[in-house]
Image 1 (cartoon, rainbow, N blue to C red):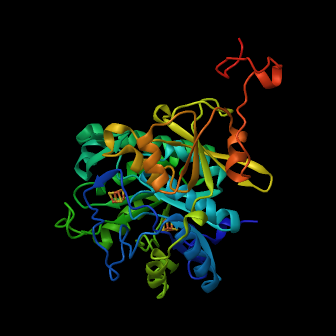
Image 2: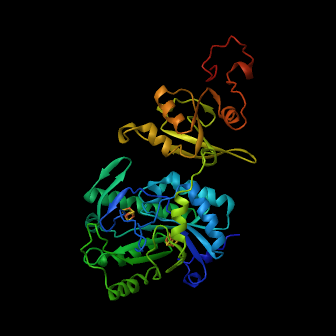
Image 3: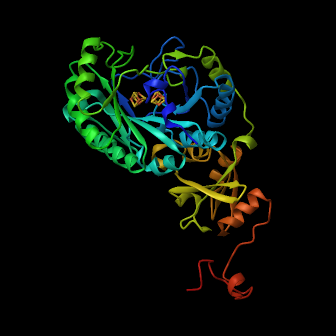
Length: 420
Ligand code: SF4
Ligand code: SF4
């Protein structure tokens, strides 16, 4: 049974005893905050956005296992970048899924800007993610447009007030949805003197009324290479005053260590070997067979393989379990106009952990690309289970048509969608 009180960030009493690890599996971001620069790969700098290396989901799960043996007080697995977990949803969900299967008692924690989080809230709740942090920097659109250069939402770039409005709407919507699932919500706010330091009280009042559990005001770090590199860092007095202001409305958090995206150990006392371990595990070569355990299906109804790969806006993902086949989730396929090559993007993202894709039709070019990446492309018509049997049990594919169940006979010329 999970003990949520062992989260060192949410329970100050646990911070000297229990450790957390951030798994750096999320390199991309869907927006640009003017205080952020993720180009750094510095082992001496301790701030969000910095990591020694990026891990793939399987590498992250092996790293986690090794770290868990070393740190027996490890209670939290977090994903906090170096980009945004939901600009990398497949990697984020795959990593949690792998670890949750073996270590169901771990506390799972995610830290996001909230822009693309909403569609995944059901899924993270099912994966037993209990803590989510959303960074909201103001309720005021004039302030917000000074803080963000752009946001990218559903393949469109927004700037200025339009970006600010969209982001804020998505963020507030997520608080409501997360609380509806019983998830503990923390709001992070990056305090930038002269820009949003006067907005914190109003923000605290609002998020508290919406059910957020705690608020963490973090002093902005003027990161070299960011647009705000010459802005002033807030003074201790300013931070003290702000925390006291917000405490009238919401429980303030004041022991944040501004952790790196690959932080591991006690808050403020990171484990000295962890960074080297992340580097080592990032070079771990994982065999295709080991990393590709799932099957993607082009289906419109979740019963039959009935879509051409090119017409499937999303693919349904399945895996084999001890009790049969399990539907995991739907994954969006990339749109042709945003990627130089849709099929390469598909093989590297939505299909990264899939050994096969079941489709009712597919062209030669995508087939060649996917097969080169080790993904079997199976063209078939019929029930999804039949295709899954073909992949997992090496059984022949017998297409289901009305002839079988209704004994129409071998002369049936139907399109396998029913006689009616
Ligand atoms: Fe950087 Fe996070 Fe802002 Fe993305 S959301 S730009 S990773 S601070
Ligand atoms: Fe979660 Fe943030 Fe703590 Fe990491 S530092 S474990 S993301 S609350």
